Length: 270
Length: 247
Image (tube, rainbow over all chains, first blue to last red; front, side):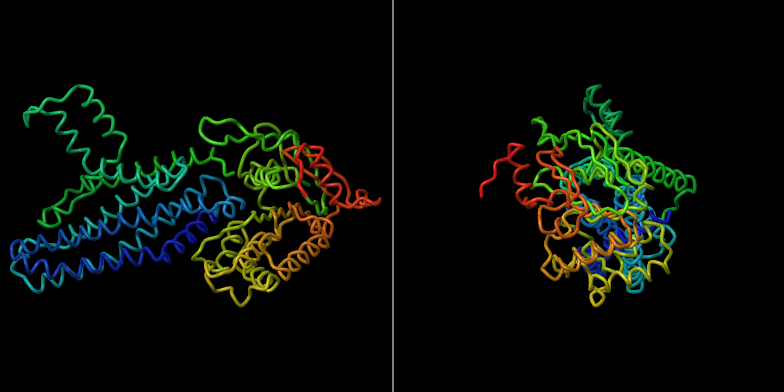
């Protein structure tokens, strides 16, 4: 456990000091600052726009963090051979993957926490300026939406470890992660569409249905973590939905990390 | 102390291309307290053999052990210090944090890490730069930080892959002195090099590897007992192996 923690700590430090993280944070802060300006320009459903914009910014900044800082944290180990100094210690390959993953999860938690504070401040300021548009507003769905964004980012980051465990370059890992993210965001809607094509008056071949159904079970269903709309409209989320979404995220993440460890165990570092 | 028995290793040059033999039936034993110099031209298989000892790669056939334990067991590395060739560490960590990691990962307590870090950073002359991020270090400083990292847990076996590369004369002397100290402490040192003077200065025994095959293993004093120089012996072995050398 000490070894896993030691890897997590250096991964977190290496990540948090990376200049890319400052770029992402500044970009996110500018967007959150613009929230006030954009809300004042729209003057319709201001509360919903402000919440949606703040949560989307946090989510997008988190995605950039996973794609451009997270992937690099492991890819650099392989490209620059930093991994030699880690694996020359009494550390097993699964311990290495776990340590790296925990470090990355900590990095996501820390970055999203800081960005969320600014997101909440931006919503609060819009609320102060236009209280009339916030009649159905409540904070708990917003906090829940932020937690769900964090879970989906940790899941996505676990996928980057899986891809990095077998791919030879960080570029392949990046492409596979982006593809998984896009499929993960839309697979539920696509599955619903191909399973009931008559609803929109199209024809779908049985092979396509099978392929989409297979993709539905293989790729993570990231859309279940997207509750920005409910948060913006102040709609309640059932406890059972929260329970199933969190369980799905946890189980998918664990299985992904286990698979990454199994593949990584056999990898050679010539 | 270190035992390599009949190890062979092949690498694929690329997807679908032919295989290249990196090591062929390598058998070697290094005894406790010995400083063993692994000499060979570039691409001879020195680093491949070392990476097998650290379990970074696995042999196709054969067996390797350190202190009687299979090299594939992670606990074997508790007693081994390793410096890779052209080491590269985390850019944004400081030397102090690098050694903290090495110590913690090897199971040392925080107080021992603190003590060893002070001692080693003084020894490799990085005390003043201990809180600087490694990306600001010169190549020689990184190499010296790597040596401190390899020794943080006071290992019984020290494996150094081209430890002198990238070092200026002062750095070379420092590393040489550290190797002599390790020798005096009774540690087992296995180091690879293609610099003959380094081998002559520090080693008890020498192994010459060419084209993945071990050509010669002997005590240095035996080899140099006549009029032969290590350079002559080395060139002769390379020539015998069919690797013509242009002088």
